[in-house]
Length: 152
Image 1 (cartoon, helix red, strand yellow):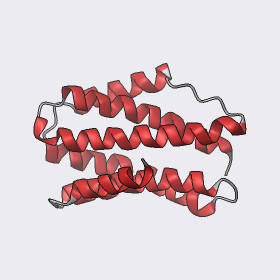
Image 2: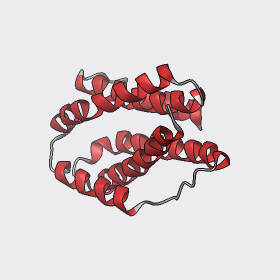
Image 3: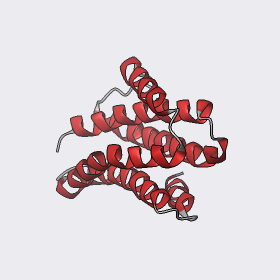
């Protein structure tokens, strides 16, 4: 495991910020705005924590990356029209490989274990939320709030 994996995760968070900001601002079904805002908050919290840890290690972490922002907005625009249940089903499939990769990196990390664990916890939280939404659990938002409260 290298710091490059953590920097890639940081870039992924910047992508996520653009993605979820687009949904918060433009998704037609406003009844889910609290959930979308919580997802955005998780991306922001993780970005800030990664940046704070990577800067002292000599890795420059810009607050904005044009490529990641454009990709996040572009991908969100592909899905903005989806009804909530279809969006959740789509996101479960989309997030699953990232959740597995980040968990594996955390499990195998020899150095910077806390940072790899943060990234894995962040992705596990999103994935667990999506699975709870898919199952129709009224408690799904609590999964997101636990991460936010623990890491704020």
